[in-house]
Image (cartoon, rainbow over all chains, first blue to last red; front, side):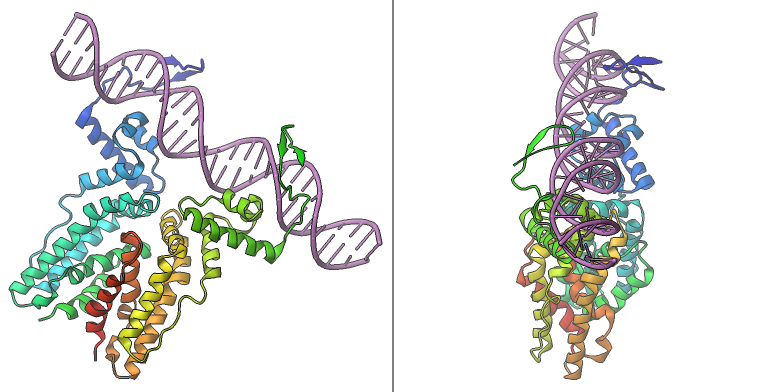
Length: 207
Length: 207
DNA sequence: TGCCATAAGAAACGTCAAGTTCTCTACCCA
DNA sequence: TGGGTAGAGAACTTGACGTTTCTTATGGCA
């Protein structure tokens, strides 16, 4: 098929979706999410271009910008859309194992394409501080809640001092993990997680 | 004064430094550093443009790129050049006060234009992971060394368990501070520093 | 003192992606 | 079945980056 552009230059299109089947609403939304994640996996956040996402989704840039004001918002939505339930919730009956299980779950996530995305989102936070609230609400606070729950179960079993059930203590795990994640190259080694639990958290919470 | 550009368009320049006094070497180097810091203070890292730094320094972009390959390298050098000696080294004879003093010193730094710059540099780390080593060597490792020294003095006075003299414990202060810095809007409240010391570090190191 | 290599200043250029706008048209619904 | 909505595709505008070119001031050296 041959069309002629406004400037008269002929372009040969494999498929012109002005004429082909055309998705709308949720179907298009989902297709863009999948394209975003594929692109994220393929080239990473830093090299992710709106135009490439559009092409991969067989959509137009206009459709993307109609829904999201920026790359950051698109990626935040796309990652949030696919993170299953923000990692598993281990319950082994032992606080140390539960804590380690949580950290390992997060680390696995951060070592994959979602980690790439979160790293990039935190970077964009500088140009757009409002994004920080979004990142915190979606990717940070849930982790603290999970740790607090683990500590409460431990306290119920008598493993954990009740005075350790504070936000400051509960967020130590997520904080140290994120800190490690942001300052070191991936992947996060398991040894670092064990140190966080055994050298910092356990001594602080032991009954 | 009026000059004629290559394309024949007349341009009216206040001063054309092809004819004016011309700095070289260290004088120019220093002028560029000062312009970088002024620009950082004025518009922040995200909005810092090489061209604007050049204009402010009354230098050319060419001169900048002859010395630094990127904005990140320029800013890293400029900030490092002006940080006095990476904060004071309190020695009050009391571990808790020393720790708090260190954290307050860093927090003051991070609440100013240097903090803006460091935040931005950490963001650029995503596009350029080599930068991470530079940031760590210049702005992170010195902090850990300082804390380790404070802990050693405390141990010598019998205030600190000798088993607490590990990198994991010594870097807790800088780690938690940086974590807070990266995830929250400035400024860092003093309350957060006190919590780090009293709820996390002190319980872990007490003899 | 005068010559010359070096490097600074200014401006233009090529590139690239962001974001916008335009036209055309498929799809949905009343 | 006809009209409004929204998607596809491409051109366009803008803005910054990093480079190149040309001119000329500066400092070292003979």
